[in-house]
Amino acid sequence: MNKTWITILALSATLGALAQGQVNFDTHVTSDIPPVDARVLDYNGDPWTDGFGQLVIANKNGSLVPLLPNGNFQTSALEAGYIEAGIATAPAGFPGGTTVNLILRAWRGGPGSTFDAATIKGQSTPIAITLTESPNTPNDLIGLSGFSVFAIPEPSVLALSALGVGATLSLRRRR
Image (cartoon, rainbow, N blue to C red; front, side, top):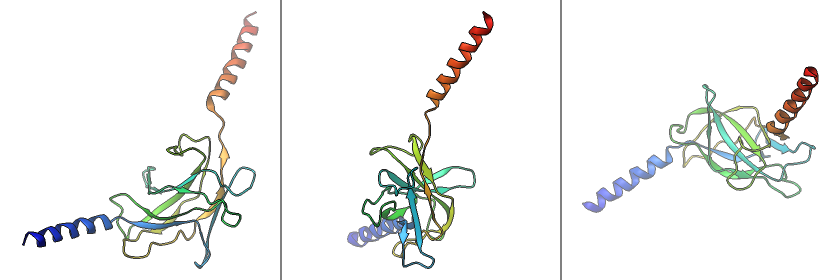
């Protein structure tokens, strides 16, 4: 009898874990109609091979909810600029059957780096995707389009330059 209860409890815990929504985190799926072709380019127009990508859910209130895992960009000649990270899982509260707006964010940085802290980054326009639950096949990112990453200047350099110019002009006027 105890083994039966243990089995039932283990099964119910497993079903709870499977209730999270999932999507296929592959930005290049040629077998789909229309195909998924969301290549990320660097600021020179070359395929991006250095950095990370992450899918985030864009909520109506403006907050962003990340899916896991992050993906690395491919480096081979044919797949450079694309991510193939497998199944991305939404956090609790986003079960299968939920339609969400997903954004792909890309940035340059080391392990543990974040999009918000990066100075070279970019993101896609949102697409509507319906999440699925395991054991169903996750939906592909149909409608996702590629984009370019760009460098964001350090605000401190610009601010210091402006302060220096302002101080110089102020001193000249006083004399």
